[in-house]
Length: 193
Image (cartoon, rainbow, N blue to C red; front, top):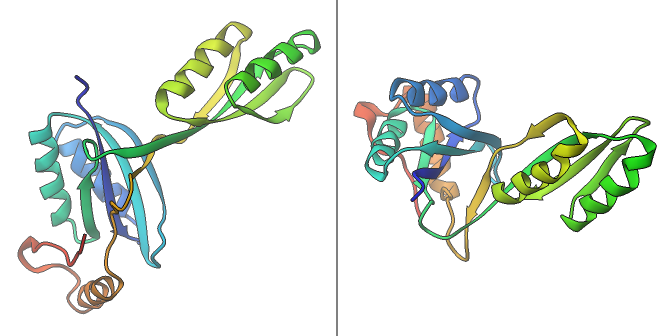
């Protein structure tokens, strides 16, 4: 059984937050398999999707430690809750004019889109789960992969499940943070499910 966990952290959109979160994982000896950060539907919050290798007990400890960081508003391990997970990969495949048609045809079989074509290469855009991306890479490897960029996992819980902060409570937390600069005694954040 895989020990890879998908942890979502909603954090205040401020400089240095990513460094503090990554440092926490480093201090605890966890290897971050992937980390994707971007905007959320709520102003002032960013969403981190962190894939980490560890037992459930270890990940629970990391969640508790994350809550102690002043910029972290909510943390959820969605690994076992049913989720939709996707990655994006850009793959630059070496190919001459004679092989270009074959590369493009194989890309179509995998649902990949051609993002760019040059005299010596084709850039493919592939969206899917990690296994799907790996399958495309294995198929393209014999042609020669000149360059690869992967986003890492993005994930959301299925159905009505959300990792969300109530707007009124988020505003109250932001105001409290602005007044005192931190949560006293590592208090739990103001969140709702």
